[in-house]
Image 1 (cartoon, helix red, strand yellow):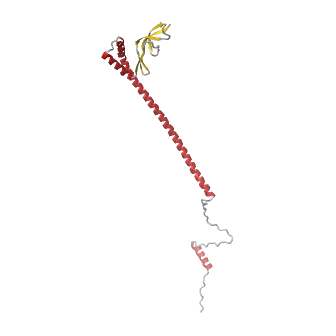
Image 2 (cartoon, helix red, strand yellow; image 1 turned 90 degrees about the horizontal axis):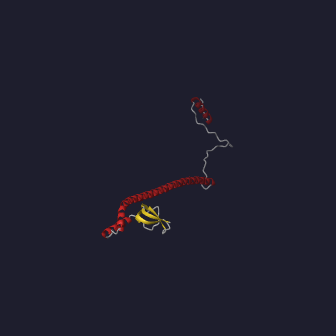
Image 3 (spheres, rainbow, N blue to C red; image 1 turned 135 degrees about the vertical axis):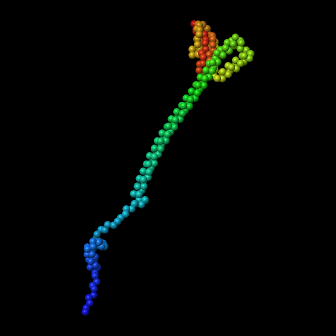
Length: 217
């Protein structure tokens, strides 16, 4: 009796059987990669590399970045200078307004002080008139005369100034004429008699002088 030995399957036959099994079951099997054909161009994955820093392209890109950065700094600096100029103008305006305010307050304060002093001195002018009449009659002597002189000196310290004497040129802004005469002895209107002396408080006319005026003939 002759026994047949089993035949060995070749690779092609095994692949055919696998394909048939995949067809029956619907499960894909391993796919064999196609062999490269001679002369065929095979696409390979590639990576774009940035040019080194020392190449012209890299220098241009770096220069563009630096220019943009400098432009941004310049715009920010210009904005800061504009804001600084505005704040400086505001400060100058506030400083000028404050200086004007101080001047106005000081002027008003001085005016109030002058008015108050003028009111007090104006109330004392009749007393000074009585002293002048007593002096003209020779009654202002002794201790009474000393007190009168001290009073006049104290009032002078507050800025009180007396004016009005015989022979003064007539000044309509300071003298009040109560009589007019003509005289060949004068070449201009002249005070020939003083009935009541006038007073100044600084440059302010506190009271005009009552005088008699002689006009030239």
